[in-house]
Length: 147
Image (tube, rainbow, N blue to C red; front, side, top):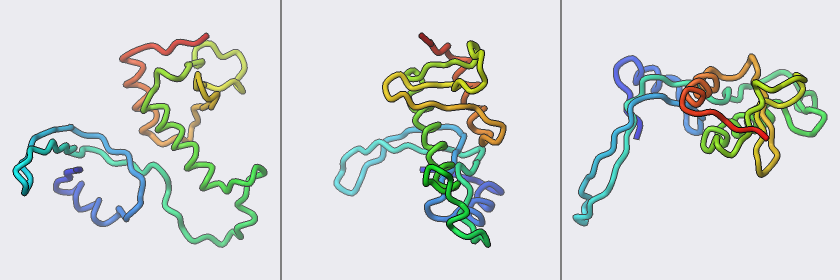
């Protein structure tokens, strides 16, 4: 459960819509509650301190659909969603990725590469701010290993 107070709650009620993808930062708390059958159930809640949209909302556009398509067949929105999904996979298990940021000679070489799937990620200036914050946290905790 997400808990939002005061202005954070008001802004969320005004701007968040069903199926919006968001990144939240806050304090995690767990507690046990007894359900209607008398069983103890573990509950978790986050006291939200910060919210960021992960993907932009789909907005009506004057651009025809065929102009939005990338050469590979994905539209820009789909490509963005797939990239953000890949970052979420990265942060869920960062030890499965090799970090090439410090060893890059060629800027076309990826910053991260998955050891098993071969999927790659590059840091970009237009990345959502939560990506840099999460990387800073990971960098402070451990070092990735490359080949």
